[in-house]
Image (cartoon, rainbow, N blue to C red; front, side, top):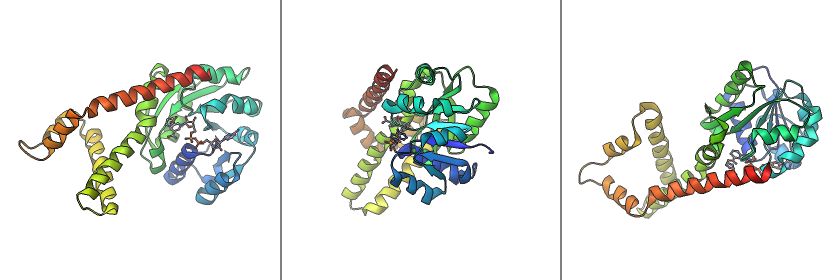
Length: 272
Ligand SMILES: NC(=O)C1=CN([C@@H]2O[C@H](COP(=O)(O)OP(=O)(O)OC[C@H]3O[C@@H](n4cnc5c(N)ncnc54)[C@H](O)[C@@H]3O)[C@@H](O)[C@H]2O)C=CC1
Ligand SMILES: O=C(O)[C@@H]1CCC=N1
């Protein structure tokens, strides 16, 4: 892709996205610009990926065709005001901030009427297996959407979703990796308890989680049916399922995602 991609902010999520883009080969690292106040973080991405780095957000804003705001939601407004006059007229202005609505981004941009993409990716973008949910304002055209789809598609799957669903999407695809890592830790601890060496336990568990997810994606079979195929009558799996049901596993997950979506809603209310 022959575009300049800029990142304002170079923390966990920007680093994961940069890693995903560079590894995919879609964009040359010389076409990626990154700004951040912390020099150590900049040095890290430059040494790992060979991207252009600067402490000056405005420098990145000036050159970017797609500008990605990757700072914490509460400082978005301040950063956008700092760079708004430097942005190109046809920049695709993209935010990954949780709870930051398109309307509030438009307000922060003030007189600048720009193409805006609101997206919620997740950290697995780093290994090309991300999930990015995308919404846009009216100024974004078909070509822009193709650009965004190609960019975000370079490190995982992309789904367009009406913005009203973003609180749920933030919880389900943005935050849920945290829950899945806990599941992986718990399963690995159980393997260790059964005497399996810890390094082998993580490989066994992570591959099992990956394979299980692939079964859902590739076969399109309902997860309940896939679960039933695992559980032999009178066998081992149904014993594990019975304990999860007794301990309220499903209900704990549903409550966790509800709390996460509620927090996204609160962030929207407090940052708009
Ligand atoms: N971590 C995740 O899994 C996901 C995070 N997000 C969103 O991504 C955004 C960033 O999150 P993380 O990367 O997790 O946070 P982070 O704290 O790791 O990164 C934020 C970065 O912004 C930098 N920064 C602070 N002030 C700045 C300024 N004035 N100008 C430029 N850079 C500045 C910080 O030095 C830091 O490197 C948040 O809005 C979050 O809601 C979205 C999807 C997933
Ligand atoms: O925890 C957070 O606020 C960010 C947004 C989605 C995932 N991590």
